[in-house]
Image 1 (cartoon, rainbow, N blue to C red):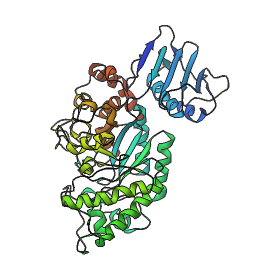
Image 2: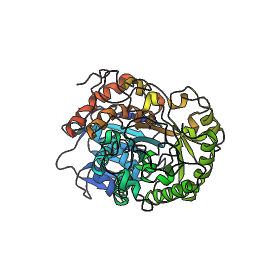
Image 3: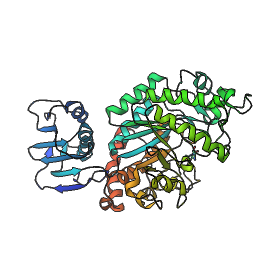
Image 4: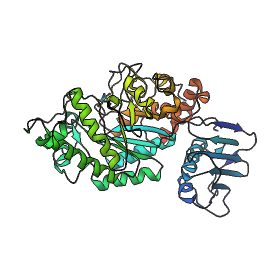
Length: 466
Ligand code: IFG
């Protein structure tokens, strides 16, 4: 039997009611009010006009908020928008015991941050449409609402660009990826299908084309993008910081504008990520020249630019979003961007990088930011992380899963679970509702769901598994 406070992320308010448990049986039907049927169907119960599990749009508050009342006679879900109803479905699915019983009481819930994301690196190792869909199914259980796809890097280019076909014909084929193991790319139709599938589950896709660094795959496909126009070697190792687009070449900006235009046209979401990290092979002045010319292109094609926080070396459009990713205690550029109105996505590697080993001997992952066990992923707060970046400047948080060492969906799942639920709770729950002992207990309670679904997860020693 589940408890009303078993939910991850922890809801804003939980009021148990004794003797008000409700048991879902084969006869239980769902009554969906106007505009609620599509989302109510995610509960997996038949719809009927006289159903006692009722979904209704109504009330005020943010789109993702909801109210859930469980009584002996039935269940009532109210939300101002379908996204809130969907979040209520996730909560109900977590509360449902093996015998179908829901603990009685009332939950009123809403997110702390609007942006709660996870990044999947499909460039170092490629993951298929079906694998990404399976990943989406697993992350929405924790009310994650953004999936950032890292589509290009030194080792591979993973989204077909009609105007530059060799990007995938050459750098999306076999022999690409780390150790040459990762053939594969998304056609426009594949990407559109991922966007549709994600949107149906209230997940916004955030595409990333990393530049001016991390471009060896693009330059291997098109030598005209290099400084001397000569062919370069393909790279399948895991070194970073050695490649750069040419800031003084008009070919660079023709390429960048074509790519941004096509990616923006394929992306209904508001964000387009232009990377900007680890540009050690780009002179500081050239980096500023490049960013100053490229950032306006994102706006020209109707998107808000997101970029790794190094892009804050230039004056940003106030709609641009620096994503802080490193381990330093402070970052002057990010604080300056906030002072001139930017919002920040917080992804400190020493807490949110899911490619960090859980422990020094862990078979997967890297350790440059230190090991990140579950307690370390949980025990921090984005509002305290950087001087000059307070709560009101935060768009939200994002966990990043780089795939240099990950070769299967099971590897991706093992690094993601149970640490992503920790980041999800930080992104959703009030700080006052967070408690490590409660969280680790709730992870143990949830784990059988991963087992039932065949989702790999790490049995971290920080949890008393049932
Ligand atoms: N830093 C690089 C990634 C990846 C990562 C692995 C960022 C923004 C180290 N850039 O993180 O490409 O190699 O942990």
